[in-house]
Amino acid sequence: MIDSRGALEAVVRHAVELEDDYDDIAPTVTALTECGDTALVPRLQEVLDRFLDEGNFYGRDLIAGVLAGIEGAAALPVLLRASARDLGDDQDSLHAEIIELLHADRATGRRVVRDFAAGDKPELRRVGLWALGFVVEAQDVALLAAAVTDADPEIRSMAVSSIPDPAGDDWAFGALVVALRDLNEQVRVSAASRLGYTGRVDAVAPLVALAADPTPRVRSMVAYALGRLGSHEATPARQRLLHDPDRHVRENAAEALGSVGGPAAVDTLLALAADQDPKLRVQAAKALAKVADSDPRVVPQLTMLAGDGEAAVRAATLSGLASAGGGAAWHRGHLLVELVDDPDPMVRQRVAVVARHVAPDAAPDILRRYTLDPDQTLRRLAATELDRLTNPTAR
Image (cartoon, rainbow, N blue to C red):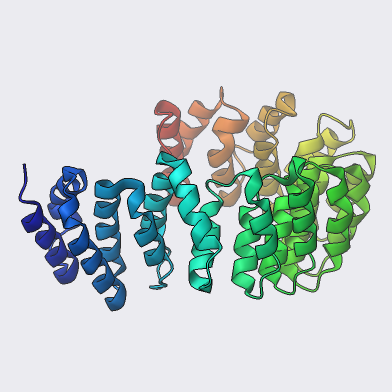
């Protein structure tokens, strides 16, 4: 048994004074979390309020973890209210505590977060809608669909992110289509992202209509979403986005063309690969490997790109080969080996990073050679990748 009240005051002093490392107080925090002493709850709530008022997010997280350990799901209302207070941090630790409680007692958690999501205070509604996404069920769609039209753009964005899988739910799907026309760009981005994962053919038309959005972030997400959907009907829209003034939009459009494939997409990517602008050849190099197995014209073009006069294009070819997964495996290793002794350090560095994915049999010898390379960055990368080969759990 521990002196739980004394231990709590020690944790409070630590959070206020910050004179010791967390490792010094960690055993005390763990003991408090596991003590089950519910008599501490009023004092814990008092201290939590103090830290919130003082903007002490470190103290907030320590106390929230103790509360979660002692009370379980009963601590959710207090933790959600704490999350609604913006202290300027990312709230990763606090969110992790909330999510763990929601998963541990889904029924209780869902009742609590629905009450928050349907409340009157915008800051509590936001955090309730966010949390609902982790325990959402089909019957929550009506609540979320109403929130999609809320006057607060943050609430609308949270609602869009929390709507349950719209793939088989027409009401949820319709709410996302409505959200594509929202005045707030983040809401449009969130809706486009969700629709890209539905696999529904009827998501193509509303996304294509959004391809002319004035905001680059939205157009970029549209390009990505159209690639996820995989519909050949959207190839003309992807081709238009390939010439967008924004670089990120162009990159997502090129990747989408490679992901979906088809003769029209390959024609476009081959034209890019032959362009005089090396930036366009970089885009083509990253995308073409995805369709190497489906069109006989692609492998010869990849071979040319691997020998391109621009180091950035050669490096991009390697990246494309690595991201192609199991496809085109028969020629990937050969192209990588051809670039092992590339004169440009950037290309050799890329070889080191992708070798175990592209040419796993040759990777050990390549990486051992690279540990003696004149380039310091390459030596470091090679040592790291060798460690990952010998210790697969290392990341």
